[in-house]
Image 1 (cartoon, chains in turn red, cyan):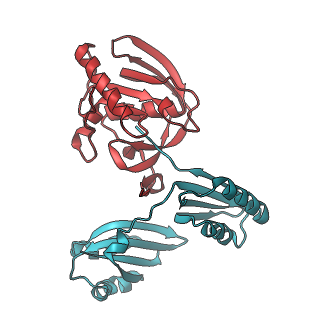
Image 2 (image 1 turned 135 degrees about the vertical axis):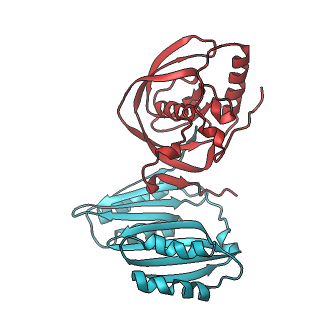
Image 3 (image 1 turned 120 degrees about the vertical axis):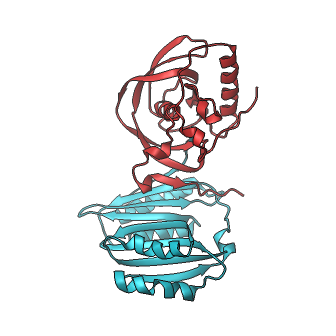
Length: 169
Length: 176
C-alpha cells in the first residue's frame, strides 16, 4: 500500500465534481486500500475523499473512531462509501473542521446533526445506515469534496474561520 | 522587505476600507494580516503590510494624510522588525474561554489577570454587551506543562468571586 499525494488548495482539481462509480473491480479496491492507508497516515485523519488525491470518483473513507471528540458518541468505525447519498436529514450541529487539503485553516461549519445515508461498499454491496454528531459531520464534509466544495465555501462569518496559530517547537 | 503595522479609525461610513487599502494598492504593498471591524459607531482597522525597502514610517504617514482629512480618520504607522514578525513562541495548546454574566466593571481585568499570572497568552478577545448580559470570548495559548486542574480550581474561585460563568475548552479540529 502506498500513501497518495493529497492535493492542497489552491489546486483547481479540488473544485472538480466527481463521477459516479459504475464498475466495482480490483482496480477500485486497490485504490480504496491506498486511500484508507493515506487517511490513517495523516495526523488526526478521520475522513478522506477520492478527489483529494486527484481521483474524481464518488468514493469516500470515514473513520470517526480515529479521533476523540465530545460530540463523537456513536460511530461505525472504518467505512468505505461509494456513490454515497444523504436520503434523510435533521437538526443542526457546528464543529470546528480541519481539512487535509486546506492545512492552514480550520472553520466552524453548520451541518445536519442527523443523517441517513445510502451507499455502496468497495465491492458494490448496498449499505444503509443513519448516524449523528461527529460522524455525520465527517460524512457531510467528504460529500462536499465530491461536489468540488471545501469547508471554506460554507463559512458564514469571518469569526468562523481560523488560521492555525499553534507553533510547535 | 519592510513590515508596518497600520491602525486607522474613525466614525463609521461607507468607503473607509477602500480609502485605506487604495493607498496600499497604489504602492503595491501586500496586506499580511488584518482585523477590521465596527466597534460601537467607530470603524477600526488594524493591519500589517509588507512594503518595499524604500518605505518608511514617515512617508507612509504622509501618504495617509489626505484620506485622514477626507474620511475623518486617525491613522498611525509603526514599523515591525522582520525578526519580530516571524518570531515563533513555543506554546502548548490553544483554548477558548467563554465568560458571561451580568455586566459590571472589572470582568475583563479579573479574568485577564488570572490568565497573566498563569503565563497564558491571549491571542484574541472580543466582548459583547446587551442590557443584561455581558459576554467575553477569548482565544488563548496555554503554556506547555500548565496544570489544567489547578487552573480550573482557580477559575471556579474567580467565578464565585465576581459572579460570572466561565467555561473553557481546548480548540481542536479533526482532519477530513
